[in-house]
Image (tube, rainbow, N blue to C red):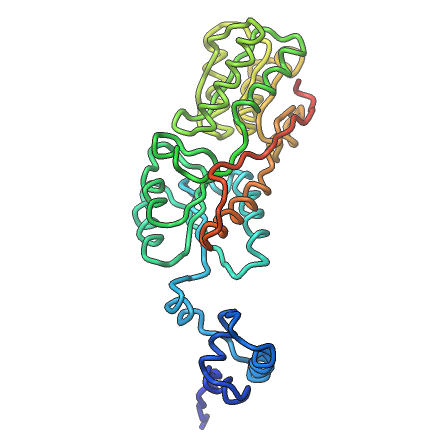
Length: 339
């Protein structure tokens, strides 16, 4: 016959107090980093915690402080989009790096439109102290509304009037697109098409405006514009539509490297050579840019730093420190072989 024994009970706050020779309240103050504790008492409590293997009850601390020491990273996209886009992985890496030296943990919420309400309910139920929101679309107004009830920092400029009051980290997408297009013009290209991003995302709108800025400044004009979501499949179909127009062009600015990757495939199918027939520049010096054939000339975004900065700013907001509402990080053109 096998005898079952109960696992030993976890040490309690009272036991720590007894071993340390202090009151329960003093132990609680040490655990919560209160300055109202003597050095001797803090050392005694620390020794007792180590001796007993005591682990503070996080739930009880949260009830007392109304803090969970958890934040959420919300990505309003479907899982297929999430796993296919290297941008998300880089930003998450930056967030994790920023949180590694803090008391905060991270909850990842991949939120397609069908699950949006469930995610909002989770966020508003007191499970986290704040939220980071990536890949925001103009119809995701619920996350802007959420910012009225809890600290939220967006990755990318939110669109619409409510976005004017949001805290966000971004790059100057309009300037980046202008630089990428100016590079094509400097190479002697004059008939420049573009595959723009979605009209419901600020990056899609701003990058199209930057392309237009560069053409206008050079005295050029073009109506060769197609829109697509930021995927290779979107770029492939958009390029097929451009080619079907029958209007010649000698350069393309693609609003993302994924769009450019798809466009390259469509041009190859049409017998066009890059850069001999068509030069290409894009935004995002990522896996799609570096593995394209030829390698894309692209604007590099500091995606890891975007995540790190978002996390730091959110913690500052949670802890009541003043921060700038808008943080713009620098970009740089990386020369490839496509232009």
